[in-house]
Image 1 (spheres, each protein chain N blue to C red):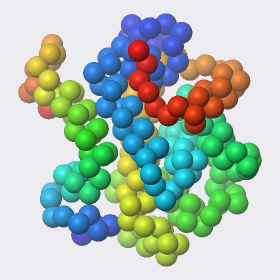
Image 2: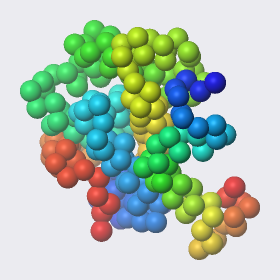
Image 3: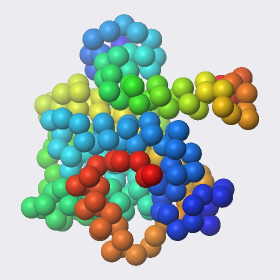
Image 4: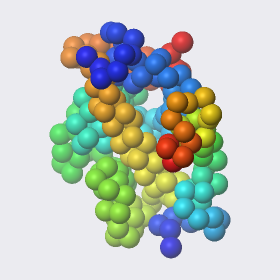
Length: 48
Length: 179
């Protein structure tokens, strides 16, 4: 059980991201650029 | 000297964001939303949580700049920031803020250090779920910012006057990525 009522049943970080979409958007964008963006000399596999 | 070739003489996280603006944009957005969006915690209180966590992580740049921003925002109560950073238990901050700072301090060590009792203590002081959420995310995000700044040994000014000006600017303008 989460310590606060997240108002959804999504697993892991997706729960708090849906609960607080404004912070979720910035966090998602950061992960997208760090891990998913192809403009990088480290492969996506290496970054994950 | 920073560990990588970032713009010289630019302090703290700004130099890192100038080095890699693509990651800088969401990092500044995160800080702006967490510290400046509408909230039942004041901007001064949220800046104080950021300074408290940065102090515990021993990240001078973030601690000094966010303490200065909090001082600028707590305009009537200049000593509260220093009192909390010295020993929050002995300070005049509200019991709710003490309970939230206790949670932030646990997150700074390790997320799993936060217990049901810590959360209940905050709820007993009328902290809302949203306030607890934001406290945990501010503590987690600043632990990330602190490690980012220290892990690359970014430039840390030592003149306190510089931080005072920085704090006033952060209080007035919020978090806008450098061009």
